[in-house]
Amino acid sequence: MAKLLVTGGAGFIGANFLQFWQQNNPDDIIVTLDALTYAGNKNNLASILNESWFTFVHGSICDQALVESLLLEHDIDTLVHFAAESHVDRSITGPDAFIETNIVGTHTLLKAAKKIWINENKKQHHLFHHVSTDEVYGTLAADDPAFNEDTPYAPNSPYAASKAASDHLVRSYHHTYGLRVTTSNCSNNYGPYQFPEKLLPLCMLNILSGKALPIYGDGTQIRDWLYVDDHNRGIELVIKKGRLGETYNVGGNNERANIDVVNLLCELFDSRFAADTELASRFPDSPCAKGISAKTLITYVTDRPGHDTRYAINATKIMNELGYAPVEDFNSGLNKTIDWYLNNESWWRSILDGSYQQ
Image (tube, rainbow, N blue to C red):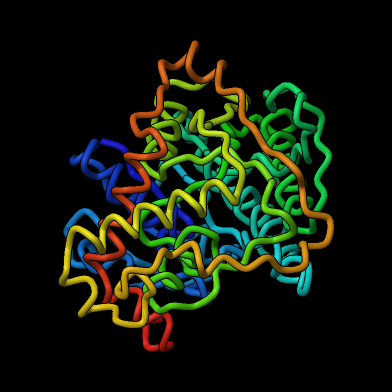
């Protein structure tokens, strides 16, 4: 039986990870630490808050004394670090929070883990797993090979730079102090519980409400799309089978331009409304309710400063070493995501009107 401390468990990927891990490891104990900033939503944990295997703690990863007390009190042997500021646009307008959470917060966790697991308790079997992003590698030209674990870091936004710094700190604590660590760098996640500032949930909810679908520049920026539970599947493999001190890239094998993603999303919503007349009564402001394609909402806006052209993950290492393979292709994952948002209207309505539980 493992005992996990999961940071950022009330966020998008963290909340999905908690449910994924418990379903696949039902005997384990999980504690989650979350500061419940704007993207942290306790409603994401509604289905597990009262479970005997789960403990929620409201607090900051920058509070070293709190982290140390949790490691000791719950005899934690595995720390899974999701907590991060992650929206590039926000990092451009307000980078300070990204430095504080992503760099200082990660270093605080590392200091606490070193103190409790190495200096004081000599806990031989421990693991600090750090969840990072492909954005640390910078950008790719159309004909460049995909990022692999040896690609030099070249972060282009304050967000990416803060994650790159945190990756280096994690690596240094392994090589300098002997902390047992692994790191995963993932591509663009999508799925249930994603905060509506990101491209897919933003466009889904705007289609339903008849609002513009903003596309940066010409929309040709390419991303590798990864369904959130395929990401969690990769993390589980790294935690259980990964080599200490190693980095593993987790991708979805789904490179697509942003405009193609939005066009496909519009087509799927057009089909949903055509097949289910109830949707028109639920969402009368959507053009789909009037038999008009959602594509009419597509609006091109000024490009983001320093917008990276292309991200792509080469997941050969995790596939060959650990047997990883994504289960969802983009169509199946996107349809699952649409289903979830249509079936959980109260969840996203509470975010849009500001009434969600903090």
